[in-house]
Image (cartoon, rainbow, N blue to C red; front, side):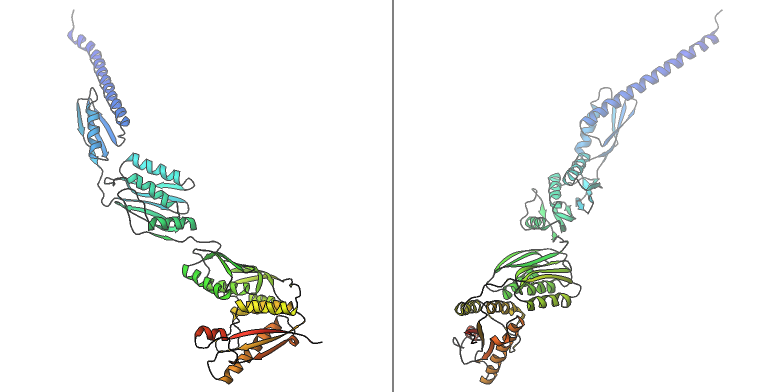
Length: 467
């Protein structure tokens, strides 16, 4: 007998099996549509998009870099066979104006901030930073935003090249204006950065904004002055162009008619009192016939050869008690071997040669020998030491400014000052006579300042010692 109730209970398992089969098939179709859509999405570079399926209906979400990217992604989704309907739930990146981007260099990091138009652009910039600065950590803080100027990535490559000149600093974009600032890594980089500022060759469409590069810091801050014969070699650093000019002026004054080899560079990092210690170094070198004075931060070392013990004592005394505040010094100085003795005629020729190119200077209206002339005194002592059988007359002369009596007295005391300096240099006082002639023996007219300067002079005359 047929029982309908039993028949219905027999159909239920079949119905459930059919529903499960349809549900599984639906999921398989949905997964297949999503998979094929994502394959096309990645192939076209639309990693920003997200695909969601509801059966055969597809919904796009995410933030599109541009309107064109969004439209292309919609076309890709609509072209997938089996998709019934495509819904656009995407957003567009915000447009930023000004469009800002920055790369900052610290002692350990490259920090990237601002905006990039899409993921590929950001990755390209980060990869370029890592390649440009392999020893530094690249911190990527770039966000996405629309509004990037034309040649944006080319400009970021230019930025990394400029950042390479810096020990620390940054390069910043504001739309198409590039500005960079910081401290140069070294002198070569400093000059290269200044060249870019003075004559920029920027990516097309970009202009240079306010930029400032600080000089490199020299550590240690070294300055050296070396005398070799009639040559003065200057090297190391000065803190400013003005300070360098001042040093060169001092060298020219202390070493007239010398060959000056200037290799001074400009850098930051000079200790307080640098100019005073540099002038101190020049003064000590002026007492050496050969040698070097090296300043390293707050220490100075003087080495070389001097003409006589008095010059050595003067340098040692200065190193021990006359240094600028905050500096310390040491010296290693020997007496130079004297030249061979010469006859009186050669001796007179040597005196004439020295005084033909040099001048003993005194403080204005005084008999005090200028510190700039102590080198000349030492050269005179060298000549006197080479003619031990000669008696030397030291002759003082003035111009015609002032009255006769005052000029006569000034010429005498100045001649005696030279005599005393030569005695301190080791010349016997019995060999030296000081004579003043005042204004009575001019060598040229006193009508001009140059003439007066020529008439203010010290001369030396050599005669044989009578035994």
